[in-house]
Length: 462
Image (cartoon, rainbow, N blue to C red):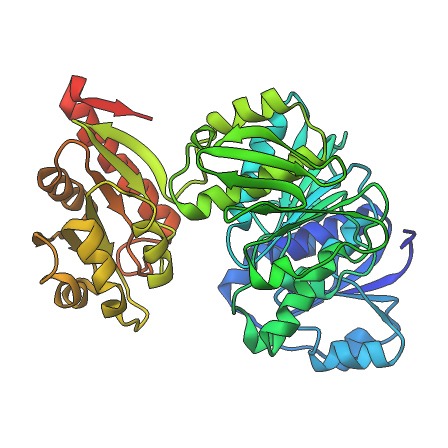
């Protein structure tokens, strides 16, 4: 795509926008940046724009900025219904997303994943499994590395693995992944997408430009994803934990089978025990990744070796250590009651739960029966500790409040017995005690590792 000498208006100022601007500068374009907000958080971006000689405005969009634009590229968080973007579109200006633009400079096959939940785990797993096959891959997109930065790598890897959001798909027109998957569709971002039907339609755009030689992968157990089809001659594969599928992977007992409708046979592909991650949701995540790689004909024994060694995604039901028979897990990414529900359903062993932080006004009582079933002891932290104690104190064997994370780990260890799980799954935001959920998770792991080191031979740290 030749953008040399063309005026490109970038709407939004942030990490993704800055990666895009560096790509535009490399390609000889003339970018202009417009940002509706302002404040200290933008200082680092403003400084880089000054160093690059890129004009910018903050505190609002002016009509003159959009005049004579050849393209407008909104950041993913900027709605295409923004009045200036709609006016530019009305005037015949092309509107592209950052992912869509970067795709024009991608020279390697793409494995792309979208869905409401599980994207980060599946894409991280794909990266681990492909590298376990001895191939080079880069993980980019709706995560720490914008696609614009990834395509500037020299040389480019053999494969790009892209985590794709619905916001990115809104402005995708020719984006064509080799293998693409829709994991699930549940109500989310409806303030932007209006209805779940429209949200699902946008998710299905990940398949829109696929053709012969490409693979569309869907979760057959999800109502919305399972109804999606492969266009233009692409092959449709599915996965299911509930029963056989025509082409793809499915589970019976401990065995993962591959169905091949054209040959009318099922072959044993793997075992559930090959997947080290706990929980039903992680069986689905593993099936998604395995189905994509089976479709792509990757080296299967090495894929399974990679799966067995996969440690999961940091702060998402992440194994930390086993101390005197008690397994400690870090689920600091749990910032709401839905995340806590998933964590509680992921273990059969009795559980000591560390929960609390800055609440979001949720009704903790909806989890009362799950807590009764799975949790033997509760350790509370943070601002919502009293509310958690009120909701769950009567259904657990013991309840203790901790002033800091180290005290919480010590209390959980004291309440646990060999064979139990000690789980940090706060169901709350972290900002009352920590910078963010990552900071909270790191502190938890440091406290567990200090405790494990003090126990000597009784510890098996990861």
